[in-house]
Image 1: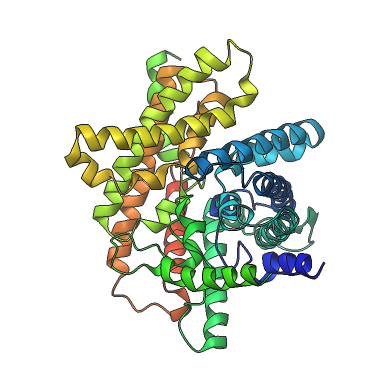
Image 2: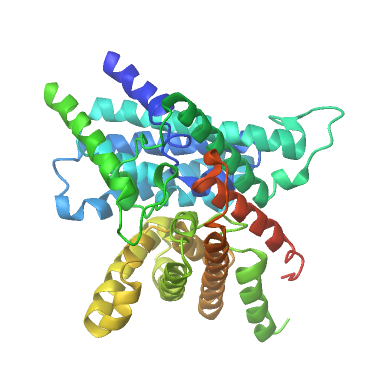
Length: 250
Length: 196
């Protein structure tokens, strides 16, 4: 049980996908026009993440290593389709406002990243809790960004209007998403710098989280394309070693 | 509205009005990650145009001639993502064999596009909007051109920003996002240009 709580805490706080790993940016920016949309998207992703982690972990000794990525994609895509139809049937309003972005959960870096980094190497139960933790972490991130954008841009909180406030419409439009995220990451950088008194090299981003989904801006850093320094890589190795030791100890 | 006007409108709408990165937030990872300098930005842009043009044609054909006759339209997400992933691999292998020069310029970018949400997004949008084969390809190329315009402009701005004195917390990603936000405001000027 301790292990389970550890995975959940890890997902929500230590390795929060939105605030620490900066993964899955497309849905983060696209659907956070209101807190409710962010919550809906986050929970849908959580369900898919739990199911796909469970499935991939259960099949981890069956799937041949060489075709694992296509196999993961098929598994994820199946669950995405199921969730998409369930939303259309039971929550048509939410489905309408999230639009095509539900289908695009297939290419969300978080899901493939967790499959590759955790579920494919760990037993079923910890993988489920890893999915729960990461999913809730993502949900918290999306809801928080949605809350800020809705508050500034539409002058309401979860749909309840605040009287006497003149909303700044641009924040619910597309530029607002970029601007809010920019300030958010700047704030996180600022806090990190104050705490560490050093530069921001303590990101928990791993190479495999980023590479398979073409996420080139992992952990707020840019994947160095010209190959001078592998910013994403060497941070990852240290982290990975630690995790491998952890697993060996069990 | 004649078919020709419709095609032109689809192209303009895809490239400028509903810009894929700045208003739909698709393909954001390469947009932010590969916009450090003009050269790699342009390379990425061309690679995306190439892949999206082929993939939207293939996806449209598969939807019309395989999924619809068999009444398995609900499998579109699974089929499209697999087709796109296979296609990118295939294109890379083909380029390596047949056009080594082109492969050298585009090769690095191709694996990054495999699960780029823009490629899948276009294929799914083509289905949602009931576009036929020609319209799908035009929409795909238009979208990719929009991506290229945006990433090249961003790369140009980032090159200019390189020597500026940026407050430490804003260095790196935040300032790029702010720049992208300002670009998105500029691109909002295109809205209302086209009414389909």
